[in-house]
Length: 181
Image 1 (spheres, one colour):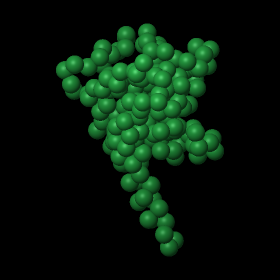
Image 2 (spheres, helix red, strand yellow; image 1 turned 180 degrees about the horizontal axis):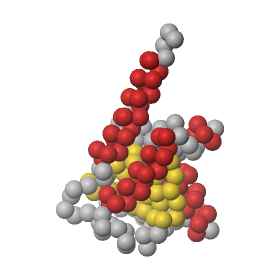
Image 3 (cartoon, rainbow, N blue to C red; image 1 turned 180 degrees about the vertical axis):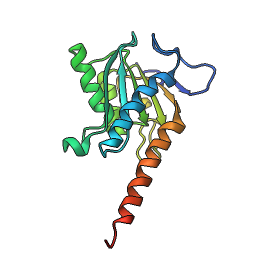
Image 4 (cartoon, helix red, strand yellow; image 1 turned 60 degrees about the vertical axis):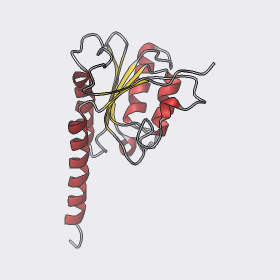
């Protein structure tokens, strides 16, 4: 039996799903992910943050990108937050969990969400280069996956995008300033 396509919503739509218990809106959830992204930027990593909530609204995991710090190509914010959440509940499956991330997830993180059985993905900025949710691939709807999750995109998009742009602009300016010295 074929699975139904993922339900997709855009921040600002009138027909959004309800935010998790204890939160007044998805922007409040995204602020938790943005806080991790800001910490990550201060550590010199690309500022991407993620938080995993139980269906009850309890925070199960929160992390920022750390592939440089951990010397681990899989240390994306989503992966690290999902690992924390799985440890917190004692199971690699997180049915109904809500994952909020500041940047549209890549293909690797999409696979992790499928295996974890995430129920809802909330993301801020699109990733036009490697986004596997909508930008480069409609990953949640691939016919060979055995799980679907709903998606709310564009939550605090400006704040998420600005954080990334400012970080990389600063790095480029720093690199240019060091040439020939």
